Length: 239
Image 1 (cartoon, rainbow, N blue to C red):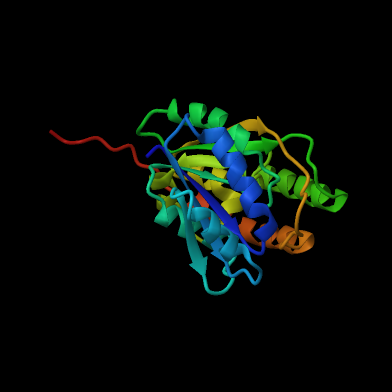
Image 2 (image 1 turned 90 degrees about the vertical axis):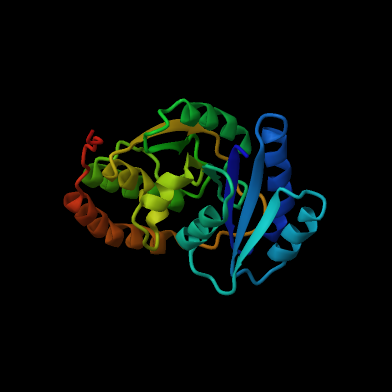
């Protein structure tokens, strides 16, 4: 299997079938893949929608949290359950475009096999509210200056990386927003790729704009500490 597409969701029932259809249109005949949904304590029909689709599409899998643990924990659950060596993550609201995955795949698989490598989506023409765009702009500028991660849009849910790389990174709540800096801390490399961004057509966001903004600032201090404490050895085998 080439790729596991990991999608964390909470109360996204109306978006399940349309997104699965788009992923299949983008990947069928190009890659061997699975779709791993992680239901993060939904209270709507999200789980039922995924189960219904999985009856006719066996590569579709469902992992469940009995109560909401947050997006980072849901991503980690999906990555740990994934069967492929490469992981693509997508937000479950339909704003990321699965048609961008093949381009990220080509870049990622061209990297040296021994390298920690992350391909991060950079959303073009953000289709969000003014408040979300404003909060994201502030967070990206502050984060970029303090962490020097060279990534203009760490909040984009569309990313592609090796499963092994992800599982070696420090884990903490909200760490999905700092993956580029954490990969670089491990001696790896991040490449940003321009991707499409769409408006949300169904459902409502489960994350507060200002909650995310303040949490991001609070986590910055911890990531800065991790960077300063990191040591990346150059290892050679003794003969």
